[in-house]
Length: 254
Ligand SMILES: *Cc1c(COP(=O)(O)O)cnc(C)c1O
Image 1 (cartoon, rainbow, N blue to C red):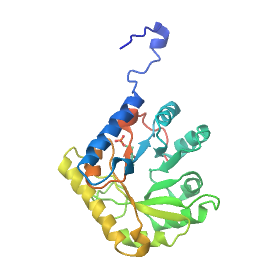
Image 2 (spheres, rainbow, N blue to C red; image 1 turned 30 degrees about the horizontal axis):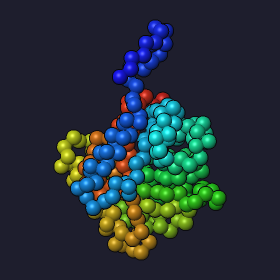
Image 3 (cartoon, protein in one colour; image 1 turned 30 degrees about the vertical axis):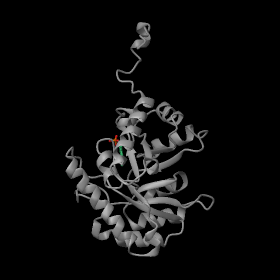
Image 4 (tube, helix red, strand yellow; image 1 turned 90 degrees about the vertical axis):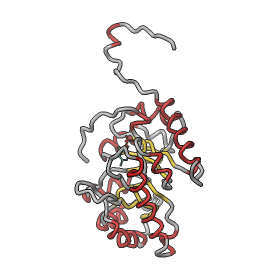
């Protein structure tokens, strides 16, 4: 390791905790590979979504340089500012993973490739009307409140088929699958149980109709539970902290 001595004035400006994003991405990639070994999935088929909320532009640029192309944001204004400033990185695929208020659907429809958090038919209909014709249909996942938590967004398992069928009738949306944020727990059996429930719901949907048979996405797994998610069939994992380190608390609402 090389020691770099900085003048005192610059030292003060260096954050206490400087994540090594390249190293972190290698580490996450190795965890994905290890977790897929025990499954019949191929690590290359698991999409890594880098969750960059609360992170500076430079962090996204570094992850981009390491080859990541999928970025996820939770807060609309923060996301739009970043997308504007990174417009030259034109092959970034932007995912919106925060809650969508019905008066904010137009900006989501106009600016994102994916939305992971649909849980109301009304919002789906608005997005369908507002998706610009020159863009491909918006890829969407229905969010399921998999542990039935009072304070969490998402449809109940019972309400899932109705909204899924409604979305298949909206031509400017492309229903890709399901997303969940299970109750936080460090118990791997509890983690797996919640993810297994989501995987089962996807299977049941796929068997309902030809339009639903093509669903191909289970958006599940974050920094603390990606192994359990992959064990239960995740196709897309959403990783923030373990790529970028601690984030700034958001100054934005939505
Ligand atoms: C913030 C967030 C993540 C990333 O969480 P980490 O624990 O930092 O990996 C993933 N998904 C959603 C929906 C989030 O809001």
